[in-house]
Figure 1 (cartoon, rainbow, N blue to C red):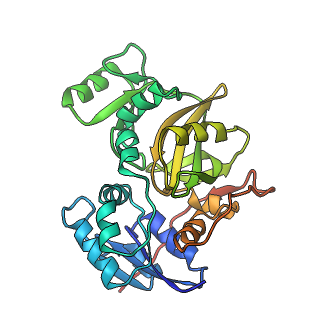
Figure 2: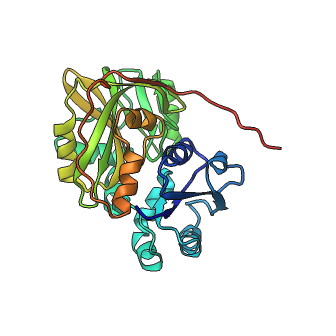
Figure 3: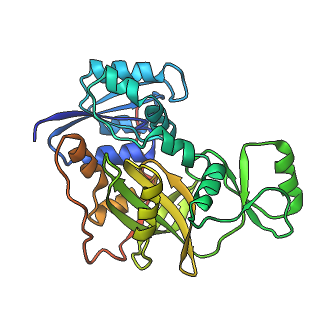
Length: 314
């Protein structure tokens, strides 16, 4: 395989750091990183670090295109939700202005599924099981409140009584309310090709979270989620890494979140289990044909415990 220069976007987060550490094993790669902050920890794991505007800024796409061209980036891996959505919205501009290769779901998929309230209604209309959404006050508490657009569990709160519920309703914040579904909470880490075909997935239980990102997770293939993933793919076009979160109650998977990005916490478990999604993506973007993933035996109950580690800089 020829040598490629790769840029990892938003590499101050967990995902960017993990991708850099994981992909170091591929000798064909020179790895660069970019972030909107000078104090991005990912700089310690790449060959060269750059600063870009925040993905919310109007100049982000132009600055990114200039960087991709100037540094002759072959492969670009965006990692943050806002970054990936900005890429999807401006995909045609980057395709025209650069030769860098990247893979993201189309903006139409974001527009359908990125807003939790809208996604809940659309999935219900398409026959997919989702938690009941609460439009006004209710007589049964507790309930769950989520930000309509957000990731990593940011803004997810347990509402325990009518007083608190009413206060949030009157605040007009951009939030939605749902009935609690009790059962086993799972994430399916998936990879789709450019045509939206499912390359493979790994299903794992979410056992413990820190700030919305999983810190303890365990493989569990007992529930058969693949038929439901195919229904999803029949309704919407997914490309690249996508993770689905759902709670299984009495054999029914109630979908609670769809993230059109790499999982923020559990990706190392999926990789260790044999489904090395980052390396699959690199091979896809380098023009190599990839075969569907076949699950390994012996990894069915593998558990990952994630912890913090410190780096010091003078």
